Length: 268
Length: 265
Image (cartoon, rainbow over all chains, first blue to last red; front, top):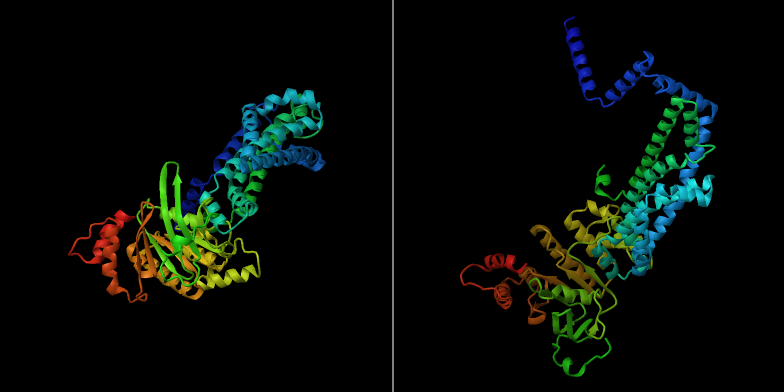
């Protein structure tokens, strides 16, 4: 009988310890306060919908297919824009990184491009490409060129010359040196650039989608704004966040496969 | 490479060369801007000969090695080096993104590349590290991989650029044994750059002492390796005084070497 109170105290102590080190606790409390504020009318529905309302709206939108259809449209915009932007960025970085003439030709233009905020080009892109899918994809592509370009270019240029010299001493041709030494050596930098490009692409997507869209997450948000449906707006914000997280996880997965030789990953 | 002056210089070559040398430099000079690193250097290395190149920092020994390795241009100079040559650098220079055996196989084009790399790694005692990543190797292991990578090419000229300078004393002794064993088996001509007088005495057929871009003196060691204790003392003091060290009477040679090791490094 005497063991029970002490074990109860023990488990209570363990619980207190768990709660103190729990990082999920404060976000949960925040949600609870938010819900409480909405329930007792402190936060009006038209200012911000309650978490429970957001959740049920999300379920409804998911079940009706409204969410997945529009998400797919937005996803395609990012994917196509990124594919174009990354390809251009990689090609330009290879040209500038691997040859002096290439550097002279490409790098000044890229540095000029860097100083122009991509989103400031939106009006020009609308004049050029209209208000359909093209300007949205073009904006995303344009924005995602630079991080990939800059990181891969500097990655190529900072490849260890001693390794290159070693390869040269074993009679490797220029093409073999590029394939076996320069490109693998620049890969970590490319992946850093890729990560930046992905987050920039999602940022630009949010703005680009506000251009007279008839589908996509931006369209949902614009529509919801007109009807003051804050619950739908919050759902879309959450989906944007999930998109960002997914992009990050994607690069992480690629990294852990491509950079297995790194000691930090090797030791795991 | 073009204007080869054979006549008058041939007579200066030692009688040791019964066969044509694998390395042949005549009146070789190299300068960077106004800075002349090597001037008027003549050097022959016979097939299978083990030469160590001794000198302090800035004496031009690394420049000479880079020339023999084909890493520096030799346009307009009378330089003969074999096409089949391999270098082991002080830092192993393994590609960190290639597994050990792929590093050894780098640039090999013929035959069963994997098996050749395996054989070479077995020779240096690393058959259990075939699939390891280079960054997980110890300094000694990395240097053995670098040796395997050089030997797998069956070079006629093996160039070693202070390959053991970064290793601890015990590992260095083991590496000496390994290098001698591999050299005995494969018989490439070896040119090893070092600033360690004892290392040079222990390994070489011939010690070439370089200072300010010129060959100051050469010592041929006839005594078999392992039985060099009786010649070592005299050699050491001759080499050290040629290097400009002050060899005091009294302390044992080992202490002198220790005293001078820092200054020569």
